[in-house]
Length: 235
Ligand SMILES: N[C@@H](CCC(=O)N[C@@H](CS)C(=O)NCC(=O)O)C(=O)O
Image (cartoon, rainbow, N blue to C red):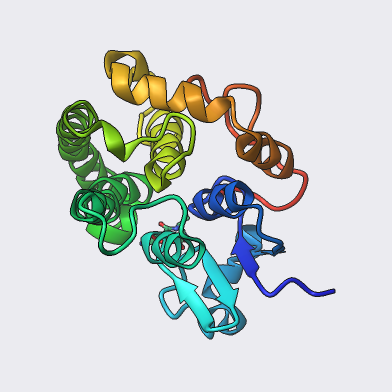
């Protein structure tokens, strides 16, 4: 039988967050590799799915959904899991932090991964942008840590929320891709609530499935190493 959900993914890309959600929900799905070594995300076949050329895209019976946060919200609403329902008093907190993760933290990270897309090819300009982003990311992390302390329901102890899936991946990428060689600035243990959330994530079966499928290594969120995936490449 063909699964009705098809995740267009590349290892250790934002599609990892969606994989974790699909695993957590126990939904059957297929994965289709977007071969970044061939820049498949910019080829016409993929651009027909997601005209932005960004990974992930999730093909569903309702059509293709792109944007990680939109996919997470769609899955949460359809399943009745991972997030408060529309009438729940906690819904507003979930929405505001989900949009913040996607519009602020994820975007600040994305700019530090691909400075050339935002400031051009000049290495001096890129260096300057990265320095600004480092400050921004440190501020983002302080804001996020405070939010997790002030609003504990954002994270689920027994039942994970979508933040328990989204945030560990963002923390992984802070360490792996937002630091410049020889200039470490990110220490997850400086943010105890975020650290605890990442430790919980590493104990879940959904993480084990993703570790295996994408070669994420033994401590993918608290002490990440570059992925060694069985297929495809992260960049
Ligand atoms: N706003 C997008 C961002 C996704 C994103 O940054 N994807 C990266 C991989 S982690 C990507 O597609 N990079 C390839 C490229 O930009 O060419 C989302 O939330 O889905």
